[in-house]
Image (tube, rainbow, N blue to C red):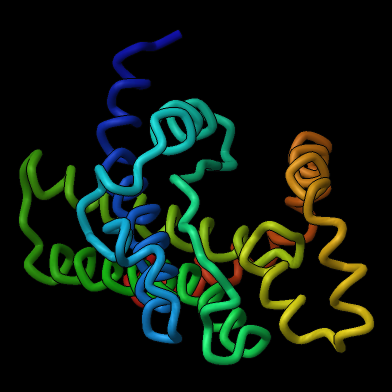
Length: 215
């Protein structure tokens, strides 16, 4: 095992992972406040301070391990949302859920801009090479988190969105599956079935973003 390579990978991915998860959760909190629920805002979860969102296991240990598997996975402290406080719970739940992946898509575009500037300037040296690698990692991390979280399985954001869109007579039985959601997700990940579903979407997004960089 090459520990220098491991430390190098962590050094490149640490910044994108922490900020991808931070803005994802802050996006949920801000949207919840906008649509009427101040629970997360009162707990400081609209902050861009990573410390308010980091879960030591889900934000640090798990991403550090899965970064070497080719399928980055992790989570932050859940953002508490009282859906009953939303002005229109069924409708607004969709936007609160979509705010997290939406933040990741915007961040991926931000990292594209950073990489583009570095390539246009054509700076050479270890510092510029490092930040180019960080930017590329940032694109990959944010696309991965956005697509994964949009998978239509509760408690993922995609599950919330689907529950919001389903007719009431279908939304209720679908919501009852939530206690089993994480177990189902783990099985899908371990079996590789999840990748067969979201992999093509992730690859298509990455191809289009990297095409902007001439990769």
